Image (cartoon, rainbow, N blue to C red; front, side, top):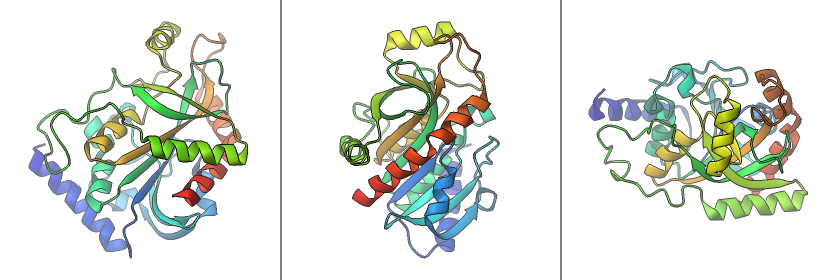
Length: 275
């Protein structure tokens, strides 16, 4: 696909969304595993299934409903993505981050992402929350590969501060007010869908990773290229491979994501009230 074709698809998707909603918010919240119930606590203004949005991929993972909401959360109008797209589903990173470009085209300035992650740092236990301070994306095919999309950002975007310090500090303050433990750490990306091996986790620990998962990094790269402010939070849903010796399963991921759901929801509500 040429840059011109890609940008045309972004424009068509953004124009469709614009035609369906009364106003464009400045914030987009991406819900990872376990945070779906948050949408029961917001005032939904418009709900658009992904399949109705031109060129949007489909979600295939349990816990990802595949809907775009325009909603009011703690008094702030925002987009809410109920489900995201992953490389392991068969999408390229350009396809998986298509929605990021659409949000940028619409004028969204802040991207807030949540995800499920395996804990590498044993100071964290399953169902804990971690705000991402940086990432290791060495295994991530860059969504910027190919001709540069000049209308969105530069050819060689700086990655010194992908995650916004001000947003992180606001989230930490919200956690302190609610007495919710919130760790800070580095998130490592792997392609999946297989879980990592103990040797891979050992290597990631040496590299400085605190948690590992199969999303977020490509989206953060694309969003930073667009000049967005980014905040990302991981729910630690299991110990990574080799730490306990127990096998990993998606059922465990969903169980611990659901356990942390109340804290995650309360934290997002308080954080949005501060924006």
